[in-house]
Length: 268
Ligand code: A2H
Image (cartoon, rainbow, N blue to C red; front, side, top):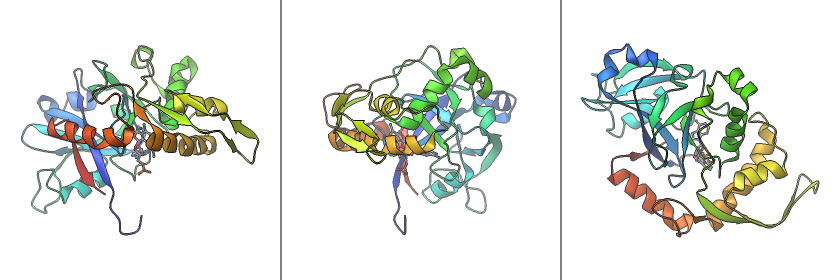
């Protein structure tokens, strides 16, 4: 990245009752606790996911609010007056939390039509990027689609320690429509036909025969194609900005989320 800074949107995902055990027994239990999900794509979101073995922290964001994210992200935001400071002017960490302790947490996420969603594991989470919590958009992110399909499989769910009720009621939500141009991938071995779709991630995962979220090479390839098609040729099909191009919806969606207090922007 060189010296450049990227602007991220931190979405505030509110934890609902019953709180995860680690928080239910803590002094934080009467505060509003939000998990922060970092995305560059504030116009698309549905479920929340979290790394399952990473170290997270809970930070004081005001007298009654607490934000959970990777401690590195909190230190970044600390320069931008988002958190309460301790005497050393760094964010006040109230607790340490493991990613695995957040899995299964019931939460209310911005924009999704679902009343509540559950925090789910994602093996492709990097602890050194964003807040280390991301939203899951299986329609438009191949990583998210592969993880979503993994968790629809009862055997794999058992392996990940995920309960059926955290996944089964949820359907893939179509967010945008885009056209994928015809192209040859993998040195001509895979021919992609020109396609207009509202499920670009599913389409590319099927074309490339992605078998699970561990199939990182194919997911990388799928990601390139899907991301470009959505960004340059996408039109929103759901939510407040349905009908607008993705390019036009992006700043509007960001502004609306920030104005309503459901998100804030930060640099990293
Ligand atoms: B994006 P860039 Cl629909 N570990 O959000 C893994 N991935 C992370 C992450 C972390 N710690 N922090 C952020 N991200 C993801 C939505 C989305 C995203 C869609 C399509 C593409 C897409 C829903 N998931 O990202 O490399 C977040 O996933 C494509 C890269 O800095 C965030 O946006 O551009 C994106 O990476 C930022 O990655």
